[in-house]
Image (cartoon, rainbow, N blue to C red; front, side, top):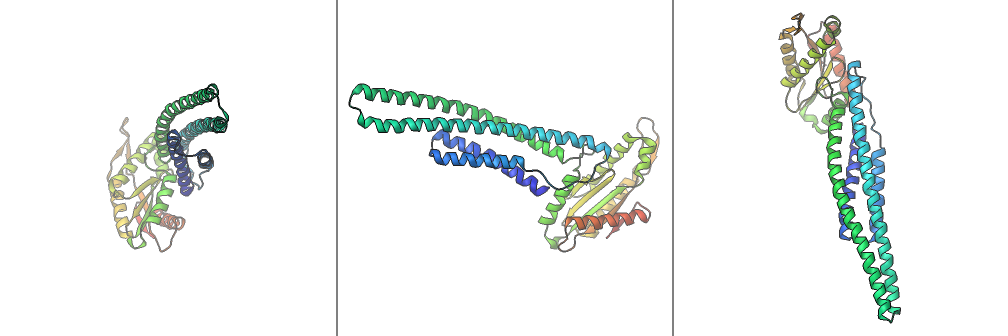
Length: 333
């Protein structure tokens, strides 16, 4: 999915930049019509290709409480893309109209060039010159209109680009905790595996809140949500600045430690575990004691030439052993 997403964004950015550059060149009349026409068709093709590419790659199923937020983020993203595509289409239509007007003016100049040598009366020459002046005034008016419209469209595109960035961020965020979601995690893990030198080490920790269903069943989902939020905050407080924290399932979280060995990752995970265990949980409105909340962790260090799927599988297996051995512990694969 990350590759398709990047290619899609790159093609859209290229199309937008190409349109703006072409508009400036046309306004300055720096290109001949045939070259401009070819460039415009190339830009149209880029825009259509970028907007038609589908993102690929899967993400894990979210819990029922996550699905409504994810759908809202996806809808916002789709709406922003449609607005972006519509404004691009408007600019392309204006440029094509300007090219057509330029072509008519070029035809007028060509006819005048063919006709003038055959004229011998001042009235005939004057008529041709007046015709050319009128054509030039028309094209200048169109250029002025196009320039103003393009200025407005560039402002719209800047706003749409900001909206797209916001929608993209929402599509990669868990609405409850504010952490990255599974899609975000998959992208970041693959990027970390690609960019972190093998000699530096890289670890993945997958953690799961112990007996979380019992908390939901006894105290209700609002209390469960509070626990999830606090656990997410604890994770981000403990891990390093370059580490990646994400919520990848209902009560399941993941941490990517680029440049870390298993002992370092396990030490940070244990800090999270001990800090969580030390908290005193109670329901704010009623004062009912929730009790101690704990978490189990599975840690795996990347092996040579290991991909994301195998690393996730080993960390999951380590987490399973931690839960099977009594929970509230860390197991290193």
